[in-house]
Image 1 (tube, rainbow, N blue to C red):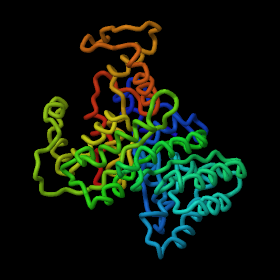
Image 2 (tube, rainbow, N blue to C red):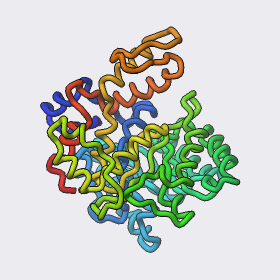
Image 3 (cartoon, rainbow, N blue to C red):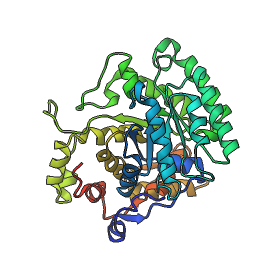
Image 4 (tube, rainbow, N blue to C red):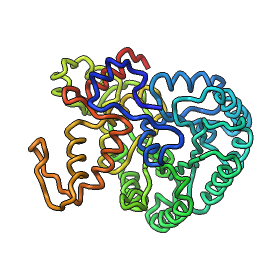
Length: 387
C-alpha cells in the first residue's frame, strides 16, 4: 500500500521531493497510524460494499471502515452482518490496497466476523470499538486479543471516545485515567484512539454549523485537549489520536466570510479552483484539519469521499518543515539554532518529538518538492472530481 499511487508517475514526480513510502499490514503501529489519513466510513448495510471499497481504494482512499453501529438501523443489523461477512469473503482472493476495519456493536460480533474469515485471510486490519469506556472496553479488547491469537492474524483496535463519562467534567479525569490504564494492558493491539464528535455534541443538543470548526464548540474542544493530555503524550506512553468527523459535503448559503486566503491560489494561477473549494464548503474542513494537527491529532474520520483529498493533501510535509525535522534529529546537542531557511529558531530538545512525528508523516505522505505547494496537491487530487 502507498498513498497517492492513483496519481500518474509524472504528476507524483512533479509534486514530491520524496515520495510516500510503502506500508503493509505488518508495519509498525506508528507507521500504520500515520498512514490512516482520511478514514472513510460506509454503512455495512450497503449491497455493493465490495465494489464500492475497490472503487474508493482506486481513488486513493487508504483506510476504510465498514460500519455496523450508528450507520445501521437496529432492524437491519443482522442483514448488515451478513453483508460484511460476504464482503470480506469476496475480498479474500484480492485484498484491498487499504487498511480495512469493521465498526462493531458488540464484542460477540468480533468473534463472529473473525471465525467467518477465509483461511489465512489477511485483509482485515481490525475493529473500531464504539462508545468505549473502561467498563465496556475491556471485553472488546480481550475479544480482539483472543481472536488475534486463535486466528494467527494481527488484529488492531481503534476505540472511539463518545460517551458522557468522558465529556462531563465531574467524571472526565477518572474516566480518562481508567481508559488509559485499560489501553496500557492491551497496548500492542491499539492502533489509534478516535473521537466521536457527533455523539459528543449530541449530549448537549449541539450540531456545529459548517461555517465553524469543532474547535468552536467549547465543550468538545475542551474534551479534545483533555484526551490529548491523557492519551496523546509523546513520551512513549501515548497513542495516536485521530481528528473527529467533518459531516458536511454540499454547498450552502454562507453567513461568514470564506476562510481561504486568496494569495496562495493566485500565485499558482488557481483562483477559480479556490472559488470551487469555497463553493463546495471545504474551506471549513481545510481549517479544521490544520487545527487538528495543531492540537496533536493525526488523520481524520470522513463520511464522504470528496473529503479524502483534502485531508491527504494537507498531510504532505513541506520541504522546509521536513528539513527542520532532519536538522533537529541529526543534532546530539541541546540549545537553539537558526533553521536552514533562516526564518525561525529550532530548539533541539523541545522540538525533537515534533521532529519525529514530522518524519513519520513524511514517510506516509511524502515531502513536497520545493517548487510545489499544497494547492498543487489539492489541484492534482481534485481535478475532475465531481463528488
